[in-house]
Length: 405
Image (cartoon, rainbow, N blue to C red; front, side, top):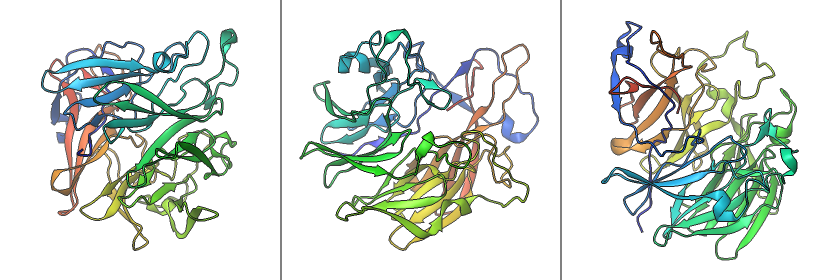
């Protein structure tokens, strides 16, 4: 079966109204017409890494929610008929009533196609500050812990493969070694590396790879959990930490997690600033990669650093990590260490060795309409020609502004 093509994950929060140009910069006048398809799920407020083009010609995606009474919903989109079909919600699938349990509010992992199935992990979305809420209201049981699951593309059936059995610990990212049929995941907020072999049917816990993870106190102990695992066609697995370290997993070793000594993601930011300070604020600046992918054309990984949105190339076979260029929208200053618009997850490899990225940019105000915190631009980078292009803002024909992705 042909592997899926991951396409840009666009979750649009919309503000209705006639669009007015408020600025005179040329970039502001570049508009990408955008069509909207409404899943009719008002409680849905987030999507992360899982808008996936599967081998059946359909698109699959999820909508999460931060409503403690509502679970994640999964959908199929037929691009020919232009129809969205709901295919399940996790409370029904897992038999956990939201009235009795804090639901599985997110699927934060990719939907990974293999052998006629889409594989994924489940996650919580019920927080107290930046941590899971350990004491749910109304006497309900806490979030029961993340599951590895799969969805059969032919039968439409879900299968529960394994559960963490760690209350309040979700699976925030996952990758699949298709050669050994092994699923890998990172948990949140602890940052445990876990694996599940599809043949053996055994879930393994390899321990924490990011010190205290997001349980740590801000700012010194806190270690932002990596949101995307990197895996190459040979099954070599890599991750990054908030301290800038890169680790490699070798399952045949007694201590399987090894950290590179001379590679560090903190060096990727475009500039150094003597007066730069990191306040005690979660997500202010993180040194992990925010997102990363394997490029078969260059036989290397390409990714974006979380704090700076700096594009980089990582080639484990030669031990090379290089900073390429900022991949920010044209109106965002490229010569600052921190990207004030933050780095997002809509990142893919397209035709002609071209990277595509959905970037946040400053908001464009519209008289008489609600303020929004940002706009969304489509960025491309042609690797072979070293060519960066900001194609402009996403907006609809009737003037609704897309401001979050």
